[in-house]
Image (tube, rainbow, N blue to C red; front, side):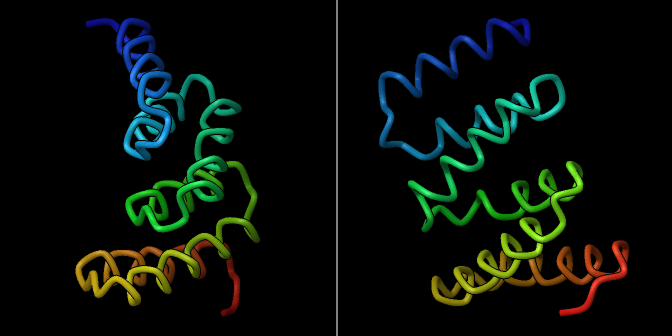
Length: 111
């Protein structure tokens, strides 16, 4: 299946089931490299309309950092860490905390 076919299929899934955050998540991941403006829209949709969908936070924060949106990336990491604590998702919490520390170090930022 080509990238374009996969993208069309994911768009159809999102149209058919717009309340399923996984469909938007898959679209965001699929469009990051070739359509970053669309990926940004999808990540923003996930963060605003599905704020409890924990899988969003790690890739969204990294994506925002790659666009040099450092304050937004920092906020996204912090929000994801808080959500992981609230949901008692310890593995995800550790992954987010480690990624956040690396992000702060790489960008010479403080907490």
